[in-house]
Image (cartoon, rainbow, N blue to C red; front, top):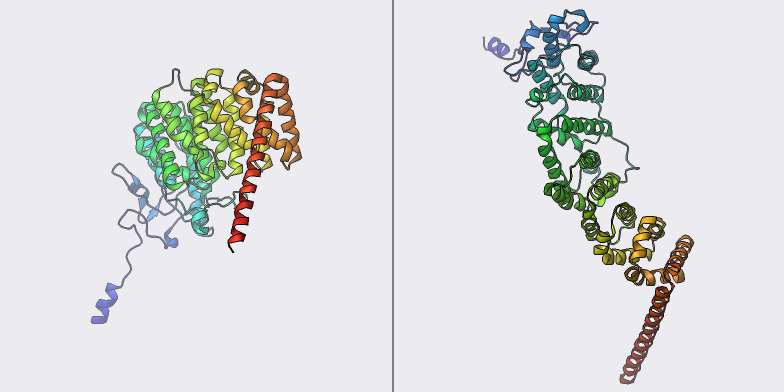
Length: 479
């Protein structure tokens, strides 16, 4: 009797669903797949308005027909049921597991994308809500650990590591495509859709920008840009949320995969700013964009950052002084690669700078350029000399040559006398000649001052040597 009672207690539960509404996995014999667009034997996490139970019959899920095979009056109901089916999640780490079921979900997603893209009929509000819920279930997930968490290295060269490819991309891509088609569709009423694509949804969408999969970040970039364009009510919130991501990246983690994509979106947003520019936008430039030059990984997103900075200056050239001063504060001391990037950005900013703003910052600016001219790294010195190839910058220099030439003359002479690189030597000779032709009298004065300074320096060296010798002799006498 005791054995019978124990055996009854060990009986397995029926393969229905667990306490959360998900099917109990592992019982593949009870799953059915049809050759047409059908659903796997999986039930869905049901919300209050969900009709997933209508799909379940005795532990099996009924086959779902294709949209073209049902009358127009039934397509809305079929749309909702397909969305519920696509909420089912699969493990893509094992490519041989549940292959048929994965294909069924993929085909359902393809049909949903085609239905929304074709504009076959306006989607009901309840179906829009169900679709956004399904999209959220699929794309909002915990991202896998980043490469630096595996290796323990923070400075891994981008060329040395293989790009990460999400194994579930065959489904994820279709879900992102569905969201994109929904947002850009002319049938989507922003007043209705904003109830589903709300602040919480936008925040979670921004969290996904940290994905290591470049393909996913490209979709996110396009979708967020379209959301910003369509939902005007969300614009301030999106800007603020992006700000917060930048702050966390600059001052806390200095690790994020999607900074470049977010800056690309901001480049388009900045381009649309109205004039006069709001104080909020100027604060964003000073507090977020300029400090983005500080992290070590700036080379990964510098092109997009430089574009955003230049957009600000082109919109309002009075900001040139603010930008150049900010760049000088962030200027690297030992990182020659960053210096070269900064010089390239500086040229773009100066090209949009007017004389008044230039005069406010030219002294600290050309002190820094003089240091770059003498850099032992030939690319940095060469990039600094290339500034004199820009006609607008040469024009600014010519108008203020009385201040600028004394600042850079010594650096030019030192290059001619002692720089190891022949290309840098040749470029320096050209710049020196340009100054000489620009103002011969000023050039000769600078030359005279330089000669006097060298003579004083030589005399000081001799005095130091004499003092050293006297101290050495005095030390020898005391021994």
